[in-house]
Every structure is written in C-alpha cells, then in structure tokens.
Length: 301
Image (cartoon, rainbow, N blue to C red; front, side):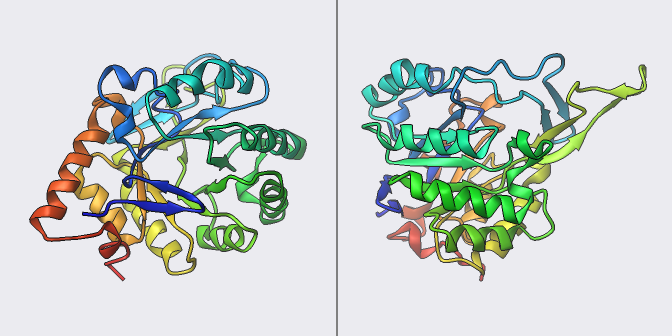
C-alpha cells in the first residue's frame, strides 16, 4: 500500500498533515501521539522577530465553526531554529515552517534563512498575511503583489515552495495558476474565510481587529469546491484543508483533487484526530483494495 506523496523533492510518507496555527510547533501534540507518523507538521506562522499577536478577544465558537483573530503570535524564527526545530527533528517529524511576514522583504529573508537550515525541505508561504506597506491588504488578494512575492520567494529558496492560498478572492484558481507558473511546488487550499461577530450588548465588533478568520466544518463545502476547481487548472499538488474532521471529509478532499490534506480546527477538539484519520484511511485502502493513494486523487473529475 503506497501512501507517499511527492511535493517538489520532498516525499511525505502519507497525505495526513496538521495545519499551521492549530498544532503549535509539534511539542503539544507529541504528548498525545507519535508525531513522526504524520506526513508533515505545518508550524505556526513565523516572523523574523517574536510577535505578540492581537490583543483582546481572540477566538469565538460559531455554529459549526470557529472565528479566530490570533494575529500570528509566534516565537520568531531565531527561537524556532534554536528550540522548536530540534525537538521536531529529534522525534522524526517532517516540519514545514509556515512563513508569515508582513512585508515582501521579511518573507524573502525568512525564505533564505529557512532554506539554509538542515532538516527543512519545504516551506509554506502564507499569502493571507496583511502587507503593511500596502495599507494592510493581504498579499494573496492582489494579483500583482502576489506574483511579485511568489517570484521573489522562488528565487530565495531551494526548498519545496508551498503557497497557502486565500479564499477571499473571486477566482482562487487564477492565483493557483499564477503560483504554478512562477515555480511553486504545491498550493494549500484554502486558508480561513473572513468573518465577523457583532456584540449586540455593546454594538461593537467582538474582535479588536474587527474581522476574523472562519474555520471548521462550516467552511468545508466551500473549501472542497475550491480544491475541485483548482485541480482542473493546475498540475502541481494541492494540500486540501478547511473543516476536515473525519475520514469521509478526507476522502472528499482527495477525490476533489487534493494530494494531501491538513487538519486544523478539529485538532482543538480531539488532538489525536490526525492519526485516527490516518489509521482509518489505511484501513479504507485495504478494505477497498486501493494499492496507492494516487489512485483516488481527483477521482471526482
């Protein structure tokens, strides 16, 4: 039974990964299960300097979902390399750092630093971050800025380059096409959808940042649709994500066109859900006589 997935020169042992932001740096999850079993661990988004994130309210449960306005709090790349990465490597995990700079220059510097680090064979570029030099507009919602960033990131790193797409555009597939043309090795589809909550007692937004990212089962049908549409336009692998919490969800994404999947919000409910789904996927393949995971990728097309 072949569950391996190839992204650039990186080979994942299986298609089950955990998404950036809900798995920390792997240490917490390792108390629940052997993190080396996963295809990869996408780390919390990294910046050059430590970042405290947003103040005030940060998370809010919604019907079938979760709003978050964490603000990309993280330890900074130096502490990640000194303390977090050695732990991941010592456990035999496959770390994929998520890059979350606030300027093109910061993103490129992070690409260079991580590319020159032993044990890192891929990076994920979060283009949903606000570009502070462009009035806070997300890199991934303006095609010109997006292309400039991807082009420079590709030149800055020899690692497999994964671009995490924003769903907050009219045509996600057009950004996926551009990423492929500019040398990306894979795309992650998709990041959180923009949402909002008004406190009816105060008449003010619940979050100090006003808007927040919506994740969880509520967004799954939209995320599956995006993966399906993107698959028809590009040849590079897609890492599907958005509301996955079961084997059925996983198979939907794979059949829509995802080569691998990332589990996010569900980790907060059941920390071991990723390895549980992995076990179920392997049993499913045995029961249905599926010799390779590639046999069912894009089956719905």
